[in-house]
Image (cartoon, rainbow, N blue to C red):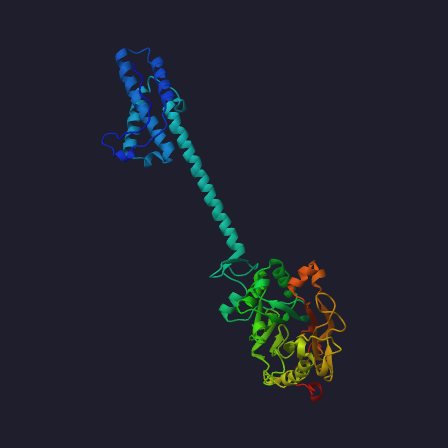
Length: 462
């Protein structure tokens, strides 16, 4: 009996469209093995029936091999193949029926049936893998959005959710939507007020991860921070810093003054504060008017009240953020004495504020504050301690009236950037050439529970 030609392509069957033609790998060994197998099993039958069955089986085998080749190459299920290929499958099934009484064995033993079975098993495995992958993705997505929320319109960011918070947002978003203040949160009965000459804060420092990490970890230690020397023509610099402060669920906010100073070195003052610990009266935020231009940079003023105690017992205070020019220190210190008296005369919420606290870079130590240091009952939180990063000079301080601001606990200090954050000198200087300073105050007006805020006496206001 003549051997059939190897299958090298699939031609249209019964008018099938020529587009169903596709090159596939030849199966000469399979076909020859099939012929030999049926020659041996049909020896008991007469020649006539043997020839008829043999031709039918061989024709079906060729079609099934072609079908398997299409499926393997196209990676498509049988029922998605071209109608011509499906017809070939049907004809192959007829041939299998004719041969069943003669060739009795399992499906996997058929030369052409094994290929189809292997493909079916492969398709089932792929489907199972896809189902498992989809389930894993759905579970992972559910877990992710339980722990994080997506924020940002122009730049998307992910922030960890606060345990027990709402599903959509927490903290400031909920408070803003409800028209409420940020939830109160503080441990202890004191607050820490700090000052930091951040030295030319702008895009360069924002682009340094170590600097930003240090600043964030540092500022989170305090309830209110007066910042000097924010220097950038862009308005997004401080907001980006505050955004990082709040990345762990905190509620820091800020107010910032106008740009001022020489054109080549315009700077801004700012107050950054923890809104969960203190509140600000934004109507009291202003820049001191200096028509005589005795100061290169007019101080920024803002009034605060601690949260927690009753309103009539809570510590209220006004901060004056300053940076004295090095080239005219004496003149500006004299002007600051007048600034202090002027701010004390301003009414805050219907009353005069007695707790006026000047803080910042005075470019002088505590013994050389000029007329400011000579004001009656004037006191500094720090004395005879270097406040520059190199540890050689004292420039920064916190100044107030010791009789009026009895809320001062006596505790104050300088943050050692190198020691506290394990920085080298060069790394610390990248943060700033100044060190942060701080002082601690009671949250109760007068430094004790039950003290009612009153108008200061004339002797205290001098």
